[in-house]
Amino acid sequence: MDWSLFSFPPSKEAKHLNPLVLAYIGDAIYEVFIRQYLISMTNHRPHHLHKQATQYVSAKAQAKALTDWMPLLTAEEVDIVKRGRNAKSGSAPKNGDILDYRHSTAFECLIGYLYYKEQFERLNDLMMMTVVGGK
Image 1 (cartoon, rainbow, N blue to C red):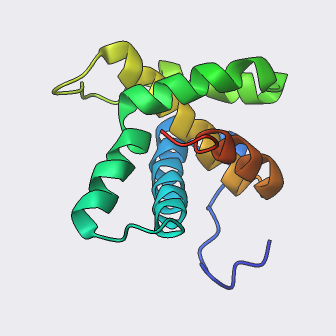
Image 2 (cartoon, rainbow, N blue to C red; image 1 turned 90 degrees about the horizontal axis):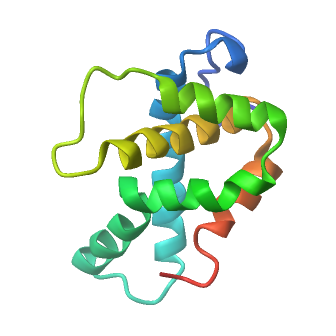
C-alpha cells in the first residue's frame, strides 16, 4: 500500500496485532466511512449528521451488520471475528447489551484487519452493505 496519506504502517503484520488494537483502528476507519457517506447526502446540519451517524456506529447497529455479514465471510475472516468477539477489553458498556458490545468489537476488529491487510475492495464491499438502502 502507498502509505503517503498516513505514513504510519502497523508495527506488526495484521494477523499478529491484538484484536483490540485492530478494533481500535477499525472503529476509526468505519467512523470516517460513515461520515463520508453522510456528507454525500444533502442534509449537512451538524446535529443531523451526528444523529444519523449514531444509527450506524452504535454497538447495536454494528452487531446487526456483523450478523448480516457472517454468511459471506471467509474462514480467515470468521477467525478474526471470533478473536475480536472473545477479546477482553476490561470495560463493559454503560448503556448497552454486553453481547452487542462484543459483536461490535468483532465488527471493528474485522474492519481493522482488512484495512491493515490492504484488502480495500473487500473492506469497501462489506462496509457498503451497512449503508445500502439507508436506515
